[in-house]
Image (tube, rainbow, N blue to C red; front, side, top):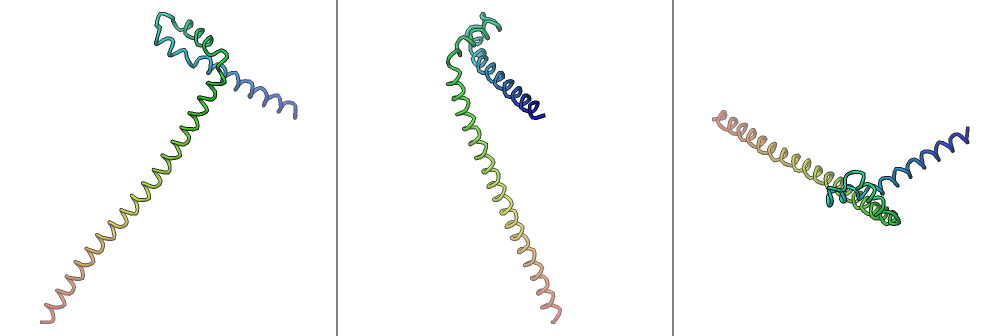
Length: 120
């Protein structure tokens, strides 16, 4: 049973590494096809694998660096949303309190006016 789990984990890891290798190899194909449309799809893919041969680790570093930047940006956005929502709700509560004070003040004025005029 342990051997089967190990083999499954190894197969998934190898499949992941194969997908990363293919992704890195294909990463420049779009730019090649854009620059030279006559190259064609398969020519662009072949040229992309040629260009990235021996440079895959630098591409991994580049993608890792930007993955970290995207993560930091995402965290900053989440923090910004939380802070903005907090200020939004606190402002709404204070606005409600202000409206409530004005309404209570008017009610008290009406009550005092009624008491003053009813006593005469």
